[in-house]
Image 1 (cartoon, rainbow, N blue to C red):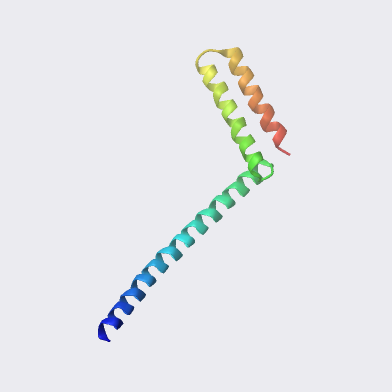
Image 2: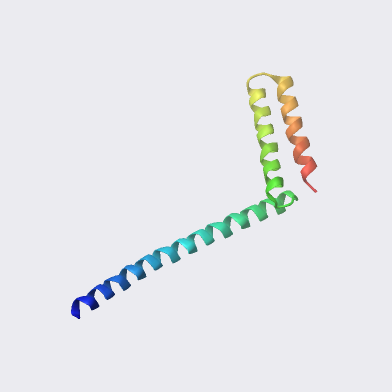
Length: 97
C-alpha cells in the first residue's frame, strides 16, 4: 500500500512539472506572438500601409530594391543603381496611403 502512494506522488510530481513547462511555453509563445503582432501593426501604422502579410512583404521587397540600388551605386553602376532605387521608391510610394 505504501509503495502505491509513493508512485502516485511521483506521478503527480512529474505531471505537475510537465504541466508547468507546458504552461510556461504557452505563456512565452503568446508573449512573442503578441509582441510581433504589435510590432507589425506599429510598423504598418507608421508607414501608412495595411498590416496584412502581403503589404509587409511588399515593403520588405521595396527596401531590398533600394538596397540593391545603393549597392549598385557603390559598385559604380550608376544607371543600374538609378533603376533599382526608382523601382524600390515606386513600390513603396504605391503602398503608402
